[in-house]
Image 1 (spheres, protein in one colour):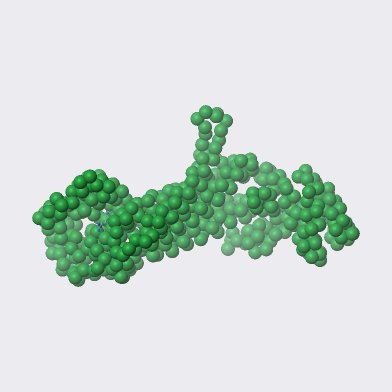
Image 2 (cartoon, protein in one colour):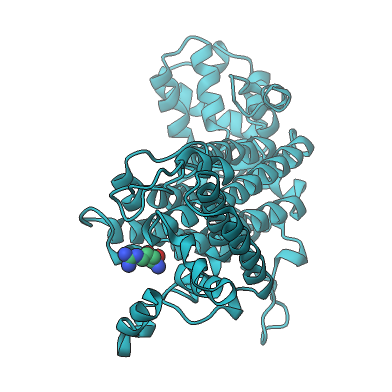
Length: 451
Ligand code: ARG
């Protein structure tokens, strides 16, 4: 019949492999079966296909599913191969399955159906990662650590405050994934090639059967649009970028000897027997590069494509599914690494005081005592080169006072007590004093943890 004629005409010749997406379509095998079932049910309900034939088609689809993607006959893509397998089982009536649709609306529906699950899996992994960050933060509200800017000691903070900074980022990453999900979760089915169909299809019904939250209404938009792929890839790349920062921090912290990764998240060297390397975190960092490439690659593929369907689109989605899996895995691994990392409280406390990291607290104290902040900053800045890592608070306070005398012509201790200056030179006290909303003071963090 017609199918045989078509197959003779497009055997593909030397370009057959190049044209075929059948192997990559393994990712949408289940989706295509679901789409076929929903479409067939709708065709029967609308009286477009006889319900007995529809029943035979549905039974054949069950058989195709049981046999698996690997058992499909050769075809240009999974849609054609499944249709051929159905016709092989049902006879020519199996060809009624493709009434009132095109592979264009079919594949667009399959991509959205599949991607929904990928986005939800990634979002779920961010929820689990946030739980880990909150749990570990709960154990380390008082664990003082160095905070860095430009990777230089800046101000002491706590492990809890540091970890919750990533929890906030992951919360937004999850929102972006779920925002993308909302726009992915619309059915293009019934758009046919792009120009609709004369058959009395019920697009809302197939959307409902496939669990979509409505349809992409305009049939040309429905068949052509892949902006949802670019948006999803971007949301995944943004999540991966958040994780890459966390991974990089932990790599640096383990290099400084203030954290110890669990063996399960480290790797060894095949030659250097002493090595324990943060490979899982490096791979997490690496996934971000791939995800960014995926986002830019998707946009590059889509840029300038004319309406309506173009075969370029066949290359747009498989890699997005793949990166979604990679980013989900990176999220799980990063969470596992955080959950099992040992924070060396003594080493962190020692590092927290290095590089005169309490300098800002001293300037704040002078400003609170009535000096203009800029003058306070000048005093502490001129003391800074003299202050050394080993200085005890009394020594450091004396050095700051010396600078104050030079700048002000009088002792600092005319304005603030020596005790107070020595107190804010202590990293833990410095942290505790910064109790502004969202600040690192254990009291402020405790509020955020229970909020
Ligand atoms: N495998 C194709 C894709 O993924 C299906 C659509 C083919 N449609 C066409 N007009 N050639 O895009």
